[in-house]
Amino acid sequence: MLSACQSIQRPDNRFDVSVSNPTYTTSHPKVLYDEGHLNTHKADGTYKPFIKLLTHDGYQVSVSEQAFTRELLEPYQLVIITNAKVSPDKLKNESAFTPEECTVVQAWVKQGGALLLIADHHPFGLANQRLANCFGITMGGGSVKDTAAYKRKQGQLEFSHANGLLAPHPIIHGLSGQHQINRVITFTGQSLTGSGEAKPILLLGTTTREVRPDSVWQQGDKHFITYSKPIPVHNLSQAMSVEYGEGRVVVVGEAGVLSAQKLFGRKFGMNRPKNTDNKQFALNIVHWLTSPY
Image (cartoon, rainbow, N blue to C red; front, side, top):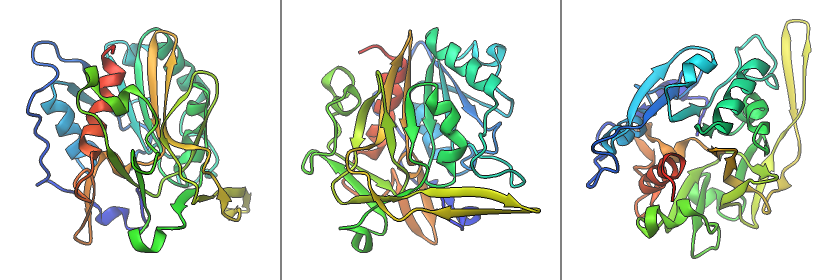
């Protein structure tokens, strides 16, 4: 989730990021957290609880402010990209990644690397589309809401076994059948469509609609954008996985679900609402990416 008040969104430093039985106690997979593409969620900011959660589970996390190269990625088992964006002087539909970077990441995954690509509601889908396309996933690029529950739940989307929106997937079932996910809550985000080997994890319900960017253009030194009318996206997803060559990819179309934040005192992410499995969902994602089931 990202609002106009991004600057006053804060990490919930009181959120419990402990892991009772860490997955890695002797070996420690190396994780690269990207901050080289104007990313809005920083490792020491709104994504600090997520980074601490991974660290407590035994991962070794490093932060990079560099462009992607083969030499940069080679030592790592997992790369995490969250809300990469373009600079303000560029059109919103330009890519946050160069074609050369996409080629490097694609080849690295094919040879056994793991990628977690997180891109929230507009404008992040447009900025991350080029990289997602490398793995057969198309980003809706807009903003999704559940029209039946929008006023009541303030933009939350619910995925549960009860409503049938948790797809049958190892990430939902959990590592070795443990830590099953029963209920996940996201906060707006965008839709995802997959082709080829892409598999859904979170399914969008029958009452979800998405407002997508329609036209993007520049006139003089000003940038303009128009939006479509809300369209049904109930046959699409908000999280998907791909087994690509020897590697794995998970794409998530909403960023708040893996954070633990506060905005004007209101908690959202892994920390609220209560009775969700968002925290375990975050762990199950990285487990699937870095551990064969």
